[in-house]
Length: 417
Image (cartoon, rainbow, N blue to C red; front, side):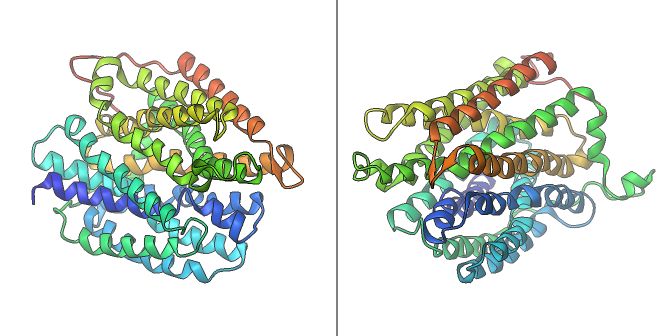
């Protein structure tokens, strides 16, 4: 099997695990366990809390001491065991701590999977900007397949979704040990205390442009958590209304939401073109504008005559997600020295799925509970318009503050951190 197909399988399983529960855990917490939005917001924030430290720490370990593919496999095996225990949990506080433990091992695997892929492709002298997006698209396909399986089998409100995720994590954990060797590149004598601890990647913050890039990556990470946390719940709530409750889009909201992931597969393939043609600033700005449209269309859509708005919103999501997440990781890769590349990817993950996720999950849960939820009914129009306003402000600030001179011939200029 060629390296391309081996990495395709890696990405498929990586996001199959996440797709098994990420968009349906809200339905499980709300409809099955009857926990409050504040409690759910806390549970959903575990990915953000875990990402504050673990991806960066895992990157440091992979840069200094352990092969990235081995660390990747170990983390997935541990996560598989933890996920297997989730269905027996009945208390939201216990659920918070168990999911936090699970995410402490899962979240680093996202950045580690990128490190393994980039290292393997570079080892074969392949252009990562050209070759990685068509490989990464299979991660999104894995997410879609898992989401459809969970939805069509009726497991969206069941604890059994975590058994599916556990099984996939176990398979991937074993498979990881067969991947190409990705040895630490940061070994050797260190000239400073910071280098001895493997904290070199944080030096990227000394560069004004990179510091701004990471800050806005955090703010976009918040937008991502908003749509992941509440998208399926938004459609599911239409079942309370007689004129909508029998519609297919309401019975299977995850299927409608999966259009977002299908759109991802198409936009991922356009990244090499957009990165070369427009550069990272315009590509990130496209993403921010797409978030504004994503939330605005949700605000005015419904599963009946307004279904086209919801579908269009899901299509736009592909640009919103890919143009900041995938393009961002490629940008970080091109701006990092070889000995800190794993750490740099972990730092990017920390800002987006760490601080960004906490900002998006905890604050949104509290805001919805206190301002947009009355007598058990959520004001979804107000919720989505508030999210759209937030995204618009982020886009304006980014356009004004972030400056990057794009070189179309070389894709990006080299930054010396």
